[in-house]
Amino acid sequence: MRPGEHDEQPPGRPLGRRAFLGVAGLGLTSLAWGGATSDLFAQSTRLLPEPVRALVPFGKGWRIYAVDPPHPTFDPATWRLRIEGLVERPQTLTYAQLLALPRVRQTSDFVCVTGWSVDDVRWTGVRFDDLLAAARPLPIARALRFESAEEPYIDSLTLRQLSEPDAMLAYGMDDEPLERKHGAPARVVMPKMYGYKGVKWLRKIVVTDRVEDGYWQQRGYDRDAWIDDSNGR
Image (tube, rainbow, N blue to C red; front, side, top):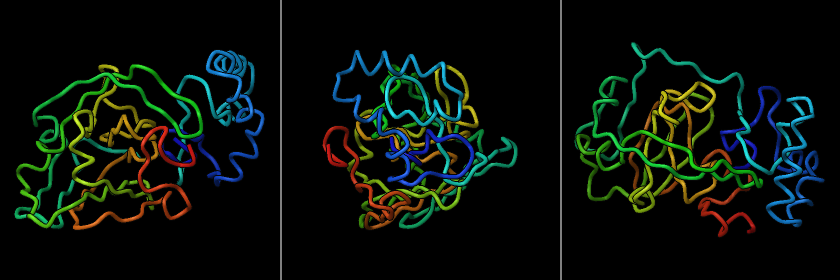
């Protein structure tokens, strides 16, 4: 991910791209040393205060970002997921209805565009075909726009991209319900893309006929975020 990649910036003033890279300049230089060395350096950052440690952009372990802290909260009894736009039957799902959809589990890595990652994350959720089945997207539908409860965070993915076999809307992680900091109640998971495409705290999906630039694309990041094939990599 990158700053705002949504999994990973400590509460406080959001960092822009240049500011983040400036603060972490030593860490970025260390990426050239190779995986083992950068991981060793990452382990050493555990001696740093948490606000500083969270800015080191490589190694293993989650960094929690936000563009508008504090993180949103949700009440399972009142939360709703709206699916609308280019569909025959707009839907409003309760949390219980989301959990009742065909459930899938997978294990995949999470990769942040700034250089850190988390291996073997165990996700639980629903594939997008099953999520959209009742809404019945129209033939002209080409993409989904995901809207977060953390305003103004949005992002879009094409239906083709969302047909990847490991793309899902996740509501569980590591055999537990999603924690607030990880996007409860539901978040987008795209393991082949950098984490900033994984919209958290999801509250609305709009079916559209085109991809729209999201929060970080409007600030200079790539629309498509394929790992090792975007954002200057």
